[in-house]
Length: 333
Image 1 (cartoon, one colour):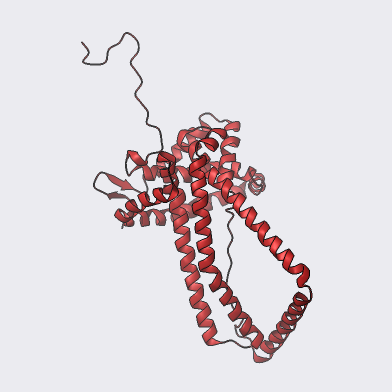
Image 2: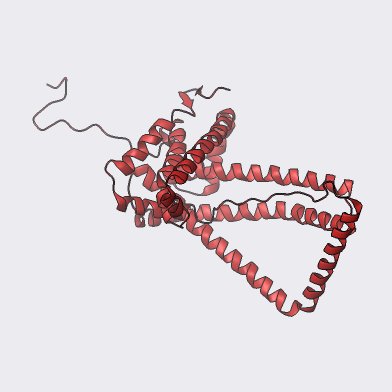
């Protein structure tokens, strides 16, 4: 399917057309005129929206590449010795290890919930600023409290489902690797099972990433426009997704290309300007520095969604100016 206009029953929808108005939105908001206070206010909303969403990934590799038997035995023996020492230390200090582990788990859970709640509020605050071109913090914080709480609960449930579905395969993979390392030799069946589980985890990661992407790009704007509950907004979006599955697939693919291009440009700018590179590493300040990029990405998805009709357009319509006093419109008596 080509990247270009896609026809539906009402109008043509394009994945490339929103690029131009999104770029114009950035120029209008931040450079006509330049207002540093506006940057910091909207930057705070964007910072809240992105709170707790720092990237992180892990790799999986096994250490059985062209190692001779003697080396394997040496490595396996060293690992077994270290493993047994760690096991003995843990068993001898369960009195403080268990309470410390429980405290750490509860602290991380509380921190995750706080970040999730704040970022759910921030999603609507940032959308409010981009859609209405207003540097407001308090107004959207209060106005969209109910919708943000519904989004917060939806994200909790989604996170718990993801944890339940991914934690057992991860534990099983770790157990398989430990068994092979402790034995000092690879197990073909174990490697195949671990590879299959890894592919399962990769597939689950893609599915949950798509759910999150669709939630933030399209479900949140539906809640912004009509209020209500997150599940009701998701049901409405699913109707669109079923009708235009190919178009939304094209949207995701173009977003990947667009993200790569933006990433390259940002890296080139940061490398060329070392001071901005240092500022971009600071919490909140980095968000303010990269704010035009964040607004462009948010505006692009909104302009794309607006192509499905006025009911999905978050941007206020511009009414024609009334005629000057004493003048009548054409055709007047």
